[in-house]
Length: 402
Image (cartoon, rainbow, N blue to C red):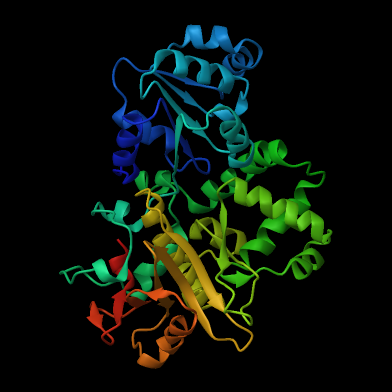
């Protein structure tokens, strides 16, 4: 079964506007598939996963592009950065949009080469795993509290939300429900470490890196603490920082930055760590059943990770220009998520509760003191209906994220 992707519409727009369209994101989130679903019959396809084709692209990029003439879809283009100057040359010569479609899984090396060679000629789109809206095949609009409208959507139960969390968002797990979660995630990690990690970092001890992955997963939705992670893994803080950069470059995690300005002297300036895919995170943490995860010590952290990642994906897959922050100060006043868009800040509180109260969002008032324009707020929770909590805050059932 194929799940329609929100990003497809953005790809068409990008292809009509730029000579090159590039999709980045982790392995197996559907980058090639979404291109394939809208690919015209005349557009050829080639993957650099093939060692012989990759060697041709690396050693004789001009011959490669004469063999695979545009319009062309080139998969895993990060393996042959030698192609980029020649793609630039052909794009400038042909002056035609949509000639090159590219996918890549290693964002750090890929983006470095793209920015140097294809600036002004490429539309860069990011794809993550299936969003809640894509799984439900509903319209995937960017989440903003002031655009939500009541409907007859069936509310998510605790069991259903944690089933969703533990399964994760990789398309293969939803297209083929017979696939074992444990086998899939174990194989995914093995492939990831053997291919992406070796390409991005000099990891001498793969067992230490796997331990690092588990230590990082256990800290999802928490403030980064390099010293504690280094102690738990048995490596230096510099190594932890390097390995976190690898995870970020691979699209497996995101670092939610703290909001601060010249008024927020007491604001904490340490980012929070989140995994994009809650299923991979649960596997790394050893949570194998819905019952143990939903009642375990990390149930709140996983609920928050799911909500925050779904909100970010809703904007990412729509190519929204929103930016994301959280706020926390030394008095432990905190706003879980701030969506900054068009000059306004929309505060979001995440509560694993079915009974939200006005006291839960008291910290939203901090925005009045920070000198920013405050948009409508939301408390995303397990309540059954979309309902005003006050004139400025809406109760949003977690099912309304998609």
